[in-house]
Amino acid sequence: MQFFLLTGMSGAGKTVAIRYLEDLGALCVDNLPPMMLVPFLEACQTNNLRNELVAIGTDIRSGEFFDAKAVTRMINEARLVGHRINTLFLEASDEVLVNRYKEQRREHPLTGEGFTLENAIREERNRLQPLRETADYLIDTTTLRPRMLQKRISDIVSQAGGEPSLRVDVLSFGFKRGLPREGDLVFDVRFLPNPFYIPELGHHTGLDEDVRSFVLEHPVTQEFLVKCMDMISFLLPNYITEGKHRLVIAVGCTGGAHRSVAIAEYIGQQIRELGYNVNVNHRDTALEQAHWAAKSEYQKGEP
Image (cartoon, one colour):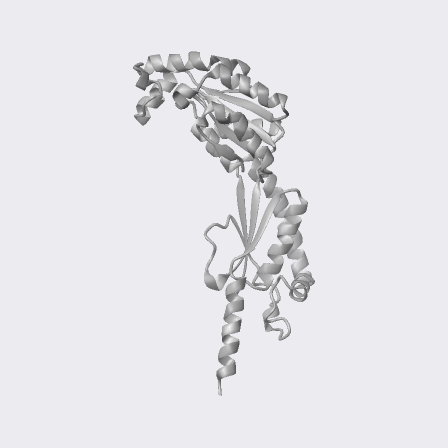
């Protein structure tokens, strides 16, 4: 499990950073009181979390609970007992921080102690100096746009051994119930031979081996899948380069129970073998089966 401690100057972009880490699949806890750091790390390890990446935000918002030297000692203690933890420190110039606070009309956490904004920023910088000196990664956001900051964080996660993953969702659906709004790539497979009209296959689905074999064994299907996977395998690494963290591939047929299901399962398996995290879901299969059952009951009642 890889831990990132995110800290630094107020207004330097920590909120953007922690949201992006969450987009990468990290479990994120912001504004954690420093004395809870080691117990939290231990809880993550003992509970066998699904998240291999955990991000913890801590800074002077904790008020009297925050002491940079104490946090540094806790980080060292955590490393001594085997926790993989890296510290990421965000900062920006005083002038830029002042402008950001004025533009957003926010209060600096230290203004409540009687400091002016300029003095609060200088005081915060002094208090955080021990963490800055020992940080594994330092990012100056003075001239960074949010997209550039996201790219920098992605690079850091990769360097630290927690390679950010692209989550791929493959979704089958039926056109008669509408396009899925979340689809990034949509494939229409209604051109493939339809097993619905074969009596012994009509009330089976693409999850059943007989329907799956019928759909996949046709030469037109095989040619389509070669072309489809060639495009997908080209796109996936390029989406990652551009910072995309979730991709929805939607596959549609008429009802969403036969052709689209078989093709979605095949595409999902192929992407999984390429090393990506994949979830395969079937939006309309249960609805189609319920429709078939209702229609069958109705026909039984006819004179």
